[in-house]
Every structure is written in C-alpha cells, then in structure tokens.
Image (cartoon, rainbow, N blue to C red; front, side, top):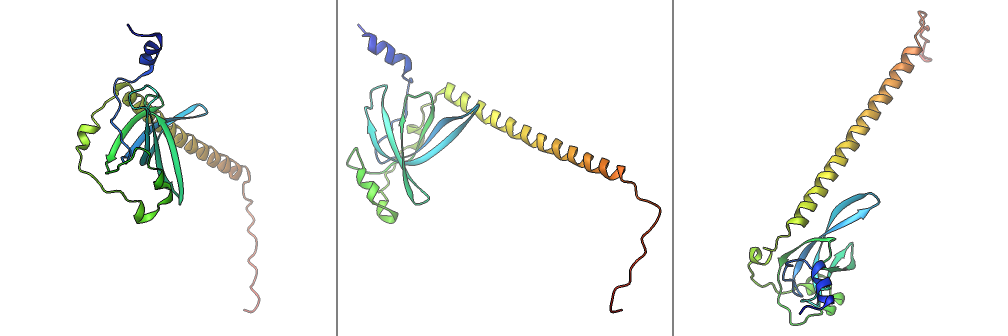
Length: 184
C-alpha cells in the first residue's frame, strides 16, 4: 500500500529524467520568468555533484567558468522549471562530489572523456516541456516582431512630424545675397 507521502511525490515527479552522472557536461534548459515575460535559458557546464537520484528531490550541481569566475547552479531534475537536460559529454571520474574541480583552471581542469551513446542517453522526451519551450520561443519571436513594428511606426511618425514642421515654414521668394569670402 502506498503511503500518502509517496502519492504526493508521484504527482510532482516526472515520468523519466536523463541519467546524469558526476563528470558529465550537460546543457540544462531552464524556464526563466522576468516580470510578465518568460524565456528559456540554457546553462552548460560540468556536473560536479548528483544528489538523491531515485527521489523526486533529485538534484544536480552544474559548474562553469563565466568571465573568469566560477558559477555553480543547482537544478532539481523534477522541477517544472527545468525543461530539458541534455548530456553532451561524459567523463571518467571516481567520485560523486567533484569539489576539487573548484581549485583547477585551464588544462588541469580537463577530464578524460569516455565514449558513450549520446542518443541513447538523451532519449528521454518530455512532450509537455518541449511544447512549452516551443511556445516560449514563438512568444519571444512575436514580441521581437512587435517591438520592431513599434519602432518602425515611431520612426514613421517622427518623420511625418518633421515633414509637417518643414511644410509649415514655407521659404520666402527672397534669396539672401552671397557674401564674398575674405582673401579672394
């Protein structure tokens, strides 16, 4: 018999998530809300930690170097804000928590790559998340088109105002005499 906690957890748990390990290089597609706008942000980096793999609170910590500064983000794999996790590279590591990577930079931070079937690992498809990501892309494109149309309309309006101002100042028939330049 299922407990109440397991029933609640199963409501929020995604059907499948990508098998992510420490040492993987991943692209995490995350939904970001800024005011009334939504967009998809892709964070690519090295997975330095995986926590609670079987649970609905399973989490990965992803690290990358941005402008010379190490940036780490933790993602709950079953969160509705995490649309997709894509494994791009798999490396050989012997630990679950790669905190030693924080001290390494440049060539010393490279890990030995391992051959793996990229398509087989990334076969997990969340149709709802993909549809939402596509919808957000379309909304962003529509907003961009609306902004361009608004700017074009404003420029046309400003041009019309300039033309109206020039038309209201009609030139007189008198022509100013040309002045002689000194030294000639």
